[in-house]
Length: 53
Length: 154
Length: 247
Image (cartoon, rainbow over the protein chains, first blue to last red):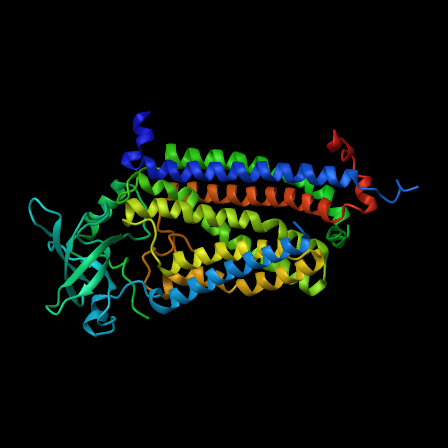
């Protein structure tokens, strides 16, 4: 296990590459989730033609 | 913040980004589009005179000499046609090996020796397990060095 | 069935919502398979040791960074030529993911360059043109935010995207046109791959994962863009589950 993490001495570079990739992908997914939620709330709160008196 | 101010801020950011991009392009076209010069180009005086440039090629087999108890090294960069001796003081990258690609930054002395301030390893685009590489090595013994890391100059 | 009906946001919205999870789950499964091949099956490399394993994200994201831009260019041409809203929205939906892929390609490249070449960064033609690609993505985003009228922003972004597309062949062929520190392509359409086959398979599986991820994320994002821009349209209020978003 330690050998695997060490990556033949290149652990910092390999895990630095994979780690930051994971972080930015998760960041994109969560910001997209927030944007979708905000957009849906905004659309739902808009007065639509049918709702108007 | 007013919508107009926000718009101006974004236009400013856009102009700044474009400016940086243009500056990068100009910088690249001016001097760095050709990242390195081959020993043949150096011999034909195509490399810039009087200012630092990069030289690229293969480290000649058997040319690497280390001064004991120091980081001073000398080696020869070759493209199999011309050769340029290089003097360097510093740590070499992991992939620096005789017979492999190298790019060194520095300037050419009047004695014909290239004084490097930075040495980078240039590896090729082949990926394989060590056993496969060993087998290919055995098969190619005596056929000279692989030139796959070298490019013909345009 | 008329395919042109899908150019209407009202028709495309539910279709995108149905399609996205399929691509998302495929991307997740492919990424797991690709990482397993990359770390557990693929052997170590003869000259780079374990450091080469960065290739399994570097090359797929670098491919996607260029491919996404070409797809944006395609949608931009359609948007300008036919003045269709949805094409411009599709282009808009890809920009952040394109920037993300470009950033990952640059970041992983830096961490790969340090142990192999001996430097995190060099101003060589391949790396400089890829950095310019990142700035192009940022430029399109900034332009979009600078213009309040969405239809005018569509046209401006389409023009910038198409003009910037000249950078893509420069990135791709830079390693052939000029002496670069960056090595040539290991995989191309015209020559046999210069990689052991299991390494190549791992890389291609990861490339498909990145591709499907991009499709899923851009479909989800185009849904949000449609909601943001067409929020007053009557068909929006008829969407099932939208009211639930308020709770």
